[in-house]
Image (cartoon, rainbow, N blue to C red):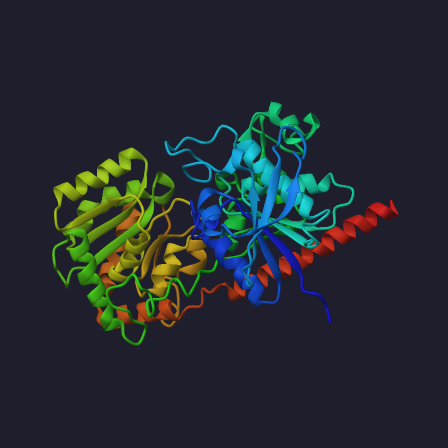
Length: 494
């Protein structure tokens, strides 16, 4: 019998314990989908306080004396989850802190992030050489800049066994640090060169992964094309074009157990595509919760996002008066730049009963907005994948999105798609006029009950589970392993 493929998934965050963005959701769901497909998948994640508390009984399996440079001593604990075990990387000096995975409680980046995630990458690379407690992966799957040094460390190991794949979840975050820090990471100063780690006069953890990994992926096919151009390449477009033969865009899936309106415990009333009339009870409950007027016939427009320009927060603020004049209500949940938070608070104060703005994040409220809203806004200037448009469609809440990244790959507009595929509204220009025009089309469709029900059910029947995405990752893994083997054979022959 063939042994299962062994994959170590390296991540700086994992839902539900430590989550700063979509990567946390992916780290929870993709390894589980791989395990369902027969992969021996395990996750390597720092032992932050919430994880230490959740897995206090995890057994100690490895210890590492400071593995190079100024990196600290570390250990590993292994959870006993029969589905996807977690390797918790213990180093209290780096990870046992208040705040989030990357920042202090005051939202300041930790000054030693290079050491913290340098250690994560270095330990991942050691898995690919000597393994952990008798388990050695065939492939190391690194994510974002925090795992970017692992392929570089692996490339310098003469006894490296594992191949590597690097996934970019957002190219804008590049892990840039002063080049003088290379020795502290156990890496030679010679790597401060444009053909290796140098970017904008600094060293980039992300560039290390893009340069040295055997395979590259990003989180949607459209984003894979976009990042090879100057507008969204952030200085790495040349390297990505150079390596485009190993670059694959794979649309993220969603956890269809957590995001299922038929069994969502956060909702006032559960429903599915055959009982969409029950969705109205969730709209009523959401209006009551947020202090919106009880206007059952008014279209309720929702948005859940980081309040930054990338997500189009400014565009929503600009069009809000016109949206209200069209008879709609607006419910926003998010946090971000103070100027956008304050503008939304002001809108809510100026339009009581018509606009609700909750600054912060609330998981339960996020589910209730997805279920209670009639329309969902995602006017992002760029969006590598996006998850909320997938949640929205599953909850029968057609999204209005800009044609970029994963939004372009997942939302089909009725002006462009067959009637049995249309599930939302898409616009092109990153400006308020284009967003407003798309919203007006959406509101016109909302007034046609038969057309609206068709949009809702199309979205609810679409398959955005992780099954297909996991199969695509398996193919990437096989190609990466084959590429590694071919490179080693060529090196031996030379």
